[in-house]
Length: 305
Image (cartoon, rainbow, N blue to C red; front, side, top):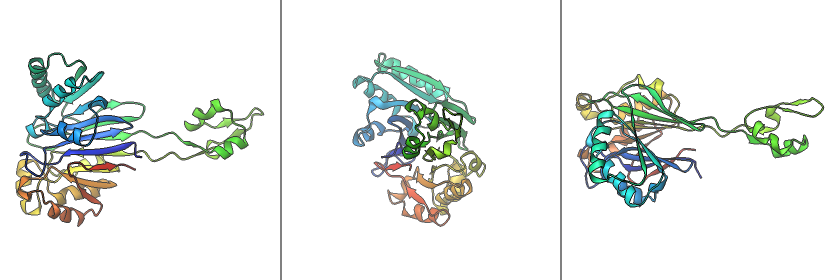
């Protein structure tokens, strides 16, 4: 079972439709849930996908357009009704946090859990750095200040080679040191190289969320080599000019960036309502440039392995 997955709650654009909810995703990293954007309908989809409110610890808001934000007050209020404990940290631009503080003060003044309001800036920065994971903001090109989020798993521990450890009689208390890459020195002073006692770790996974944004080749270096890239694909080729004017991208442009960034896989989303839930044209255009492309869809879970 994957320890790093992306769950799609909504993949539509500005207007909710019968086919798609506005933007929202939940990242499950080793059992800890982190939400990226919170359009209307997000909390209902969490229930349908059996993602527990109690495990949600961080919420990242890319920008202050309603289709990425309007579901947040309702979600936080519902979490209070479910008697959530602990802390939820909201990472968003200060203007949005101020609105949220005032809204919660009126409608949910005593949620029963701690809400931490963490202002982000319109720049590239590391906003979370733990032993296992970093989260970075990357500056996007939209009509208002907007950032993407890049989640990078840190290098994992090496795997113990049980046969060799027993052969050299390595004591149990040395296992953590071996997993960290240290050599083992035997009682007679002989040094056993770590690679003889361990196997390489599983590859570290990474995920980039890039929405909303016009096509920007400079982003490729900032997200180079990510395991999975989510990139907005609001329009098809025929509406490329409209995409540029409105600070959005076409599916083909998303694929171009994925190819330039050498991403492992591309997921398209933020679909315009004009496609009526049938985004196969967008998928076809993207795959002409970057074959390993999939469409986001409500209820989809993508495991990074």
